[in-house]
Image (tube, rainbow, N blue to C red; front, side):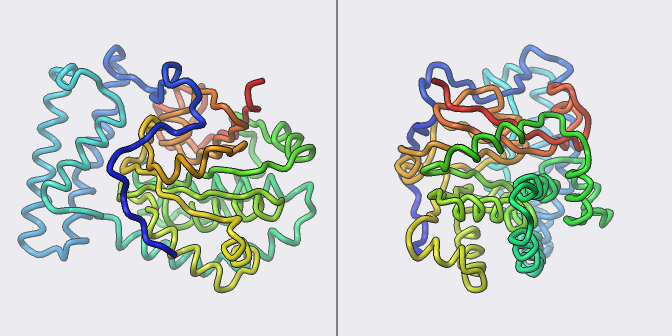
Amino acid sequence: MTRWTPSEDGVVFPLIGSIDDYEPHTIEMLDDAEARRYWLDVFRTHTAGLAERAALAAGNDEDAQARAAEFAAAFDAVLDRLESDPFTFGSLDIALLCTLRQHLLATQGFDDPFLPIKQKENADALALLPALLTELDALPEAERLRRLIAGVFAGNIFDFGASEAIKLYEAGQVDFHVTREQVAAKQWLVDHLAKLEARFAEHVHRRAVVFVDNAGADVVLGMIPLARYLLQRGTHVVLTANSKPALNDVIHDELEELIDQIAAFDAPIADALADGSLTLAPSGNALPVIDLTSVDAQLAAAAEDADLLVLEGMGRALETNYRHRFTCDTLKLAMIKEQHVADVLGGKLYDVVCHFDLAPE
């Protein structure tokens, strides 16, 4: 595949509709002291572990450890300042906190602290994928979509942006197949699956833009099988991932490599690449959340005539973009892995959201 070259300027994602009506952030902290305390504590709690991973990814020598310590001290100082003066930057939301953290990591020369973890998880997930695809292809059509969506939720638990998910991962308690069966059997907090199934029964979408989230089981065992299903239905699929690293999110170049590897053993993916019905475009994003007023021009061009949008993951589908009504059919999928997000949505930890909107008439 052709390697990605970043555009000079971001452009507005065309499926937003009126930019004046677009407010990406579900959680605003300036006027909510409780939310502010919660999220500042979340980011503060993550800092030591992130610094440790950054040092390890850089060789863990004395210099790497010193730079990691500098990052941690600098970011803790920023959080202290925001705690005492939340108006320091004029606004305060999850995107701002992520941006500040990424900037301070880059200042210390840490580009992708989670690269070793992503590489391991991608390899582990790829080993499971052929059997999973065989299983999914053998399912009756009436069962297949629910099992695919449950797989998206099961994969989405692999998330180093969520403190509870980190605890599960580090305790070795994340198993894709077990989690998928548990999710499939439970009541979903937001369950629009019947509405989605009815829409699919009457309509084959022309083009779908599918935003993916984390590396490993999330993208390989959750989102790629869903994208493959759309391809098998006759929909052109545009897969889009972050342009630059953010925690354990898969990035565009990594997604290209994964798709090439999958095409080597899976005919539907190989055929879709060959006939152009599967394309990949960088999102232009470098955060775990996304503001769609500035995306890569290549993605914007690919999305112009899309009639289905899929946003996956807590950052892209819940913490941002959850309340916005896009101009096309829109599917928002995520597992809730932060207590405050659960509180905002009226649910609990590990609830799942399958939210489907038909295009406005």
